[in-house]
Length: 613
Image: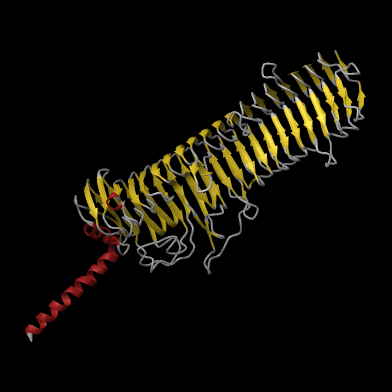
């Protein structure tokens, strides 16, 4: 009997210890606990330390001293855990499947709270041992988590198709003061990937069988003070889900360089700030878009609540220095090469972009290239040495403002490129800009860009024209600008039916053989007219003002000095025009009326109180 009692106690004793341990765990829940690794520990040793918090028992701190840690399996980290790694602690991934560290998802129910309050500080996290493998996984992977911080760490060397850090459905994630580099492959991927938890292809995981895929985007990701290089892309996304948007993303104070593609690639982001970064030697500086034809834009899951397209994406790109942007060879043409590029379309317009106080130089294509981007504000930027146009807005960039920018040597010499241009974009204000030495035109409008205001700009040393309008870009106002030392025309309109050109100062140069100060070839199909008044014109090798195919227009109150040909010449198809109150001095040709005005015999015009001397 006594023997049976002893055996019974022996059997019950482990159970008692287990129950007591659970009671003790409950008793200390939420308290601080510090544990430490030993130099050279393996993955199982480290996992035992992390497992102290398997049941969310403590505010756990795991201290990892200097040393080399070869890891043969993925480490799982739990909520309320801080990993403090010595700067000289090297973690070498020696397994192909899984990340170096991933948050635990054993209780995943979707949403942002499957894991929370995780910090990784310090250490060198390296996958070079498996970098030549044909499959890739992240060094760090966080899914359905909140309050995730990676700081003061070096994260490097992943194989083809890999990211260094992935945030999938993360709220309040921070990467601060980290160095990230090293990619063995050519398929473009992001060093820091911001992703939506859509399926196990978009967001793979060793725990994918228990992940609740719910189309959860990221909200509140900050990447700051990082050095990212030798990678295809630094930060961003290349996949989006219809009706789902990443929000409140901040990328600031980083050094992005030596990247084969984009420094920042933001696909369907709302409330995005890209500020104070230095970007050098990349295939594109900053790319923000809602649409690219060959990008992954997937249908939402059945139970996903989709959001409507934002009326204002609230994108702010400010204070960045972007230089040495090169073109990327594509299968049929070269790609990118732009400092800042935004893309929307009629179905998904990108509205509410502000680009300010950036310095952009030495780009193999455009300094700034905006497409389908309505109500953009582009102000106080400095652009220098772009092969194509310095600032170019196309395909519905309506109601935008381009103000107080400085452009120098934009557009290659002898090319059709130049300073600030619009194509198929209406009601844009171009004001207070300084454009020096553009390849062709300083400021120009193409493809029925109508109702625009070009005011208070300074254009000098244009390869051809200071300000130019083309292709029925009707109804624009060109007022209060100063154009100097142009090679062809100061202000030029071709196949344009209407416009207002007032109070501009146009100074030609005999050394540059500057031709007409204002040269208009109209469009007879337009019922409207030109108004050309109160302009000050000095020194042309041809005419001060030349108009052709411009019926019923008004040319009045202009001051024209030293034209080598006529002060004003009225060509054919300009009947019904009024030439009033102009002052012409030292015209090379006085014309039949001895007042510096020449009129084609087929154009009946009214002249009144014009003066010449």
